[in-house]
Image 1: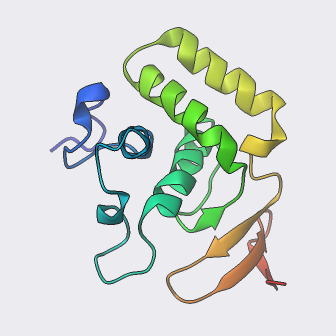
Image 2: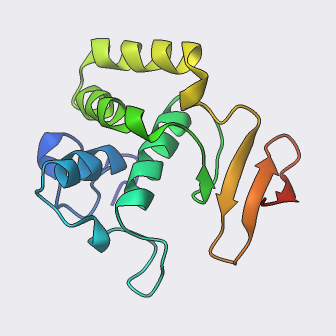
Length: 139
């Protein structure tokens, strides 16, 4: 399998390699149970909140920011629109791709902005500075 050529597009929900944006959109439409998505069936790191956070991770990676799977930030009320644009861009919509890039550049709510909340499966929970990946205790 070519890991750089996974199936994309609106029809990939339910496929083994659906994007976070595809799953989020299907979840919000009532088409899938987000409880089936996550780290593992035994892990509490699963469900709608995780899929929502992964939409922002997907956007950050697409814009060149390096973040970890456990990093969290951003405004949850923006996720529906971000997911719709990501799905459209994955389907080849160049205008959606350009809109994502412009929105990401101008709106700090979509970017990690120097620190993220880390919810690692190792048990660490707290804010982490991205420059040096140094943690500070959660308040």
